[in-house]
Length: 461
Ligand SMILES: Cc1cc2nc3c(=O)[nH]c(=O)nc-3n(C[C@H](O)[C@H](O)[C@H](O)COP(=O)(O)OP(=O)(O)OC[C@H]3O[C@@H](n4cnc5c(N)ncnc54)[C@H](O)[C@@H]3O)c2cc1C
Image (cartoon, rainbow, N blue to C red; front, side, top):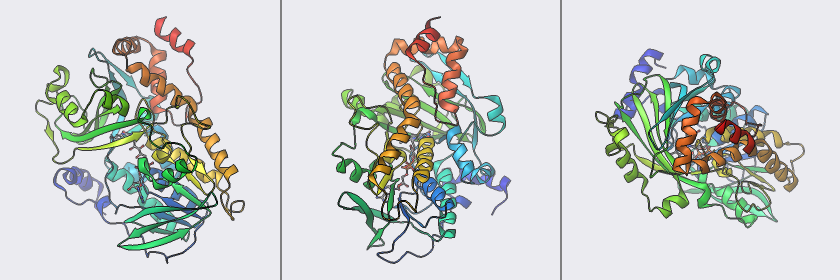
């Protein structure tokens, strides 16, 4: 391994020039298991959710099969902000020290900007910033690789297998129970089985598709899906190099949604824009064009980008499946995420925060929850529908307060005047600042729900 200063010096060259870094080296996952092999748990997808689940399951001594369609290192379109909730799991999984040794931007505050240009800077709790527990931002290529490397190691140590470049094509269901999967690696079709399959394949996860289809519920609800576009830039005025604020701006024409500026270290900045899909359709919006307009034309931002330079070919779009409560809920919220033989986690369970867009924390939280519900003794013959329901209920119990709260804020920002008023009040009201800090920096799922009365009182008095 190169020394830290050397890595610090050269890491951004990898972004700018495509130079290979330590965490950009291939990961050796060992031999591909024989066709027809059986495991305790199959995990589909090796993002933060899948790597977290595989890590937690391996730590319990289970024989895990971790399947990932990409070959590591891989990029993931994201804003690259990693909040306090994620860091707590990163620590539990044993990755925190390694993460700290790699270059990252330390987030000490968040700037919210209103449609009228007014801004409020919310400081994250000082002791948490000091103890490196508040929030980081760093490219997902780097963050996800560290998590996957850790899962790869733990899974192999506990007798399981990991396959990269393996695309899951089919989920096998017999008599209403998921029995395993089949997929393709290097042109060869292989089939594996387990009492439990975990869907961690992101917004278009095949396990999630099977689960929602089984319950005859729609998987994609455009009112609760967000489209987003990101690019990397250098030389954006007003951004710290290795620590400082990340910025969320609510701009007319980008509501409900926001424009973000998240520094990721050494002067490199992740700049992006996101909007709820029904709204994009209604306003016939193309996100790349909208972002070009904000950067080049909007009076507030064009000055800050006047001397900035875009990192070539860094522009990418993707989707965020929100965890907001559905209007006419079926039996479960936010949608069905489990059935006999299967549980979905992270984006595959539609758990992204509808106000902040943060999804890594809930991917890791749901990974841990799934690992606590699965009991090899009890589920040897198959993960039961009762246990699937238990997961569904516990997941919503844990997340409903914060996701409902965030959804209310997302609805509020849709109204330009209300948003201006809200930011104006937040400049003066410490309670409001604390509520926003909680929402963003909290290490646990937030249990406390801010009632309408609390909101009313805090905003008006
Ligand atoms: C533009 C944008 C900005 C965002 N900004 C932030 C942010 O700043 N902070 C934050 O916390 N969250 C952010 N999010 C959300 C965050 O990216 C996700 O919530 C998070 O990545 C979810 O993790 P996951 O493991 O569930 O899914 P993913 O990270 O999507 O991982 C899924 C994995 O499954 C693999 N896979 C998919 N299909 C298959 C298959 N058929 N077979 C095998 N493998 C498969 C994929 O290759 C991938 O590696 C953002 C999202 C977007 C789109």
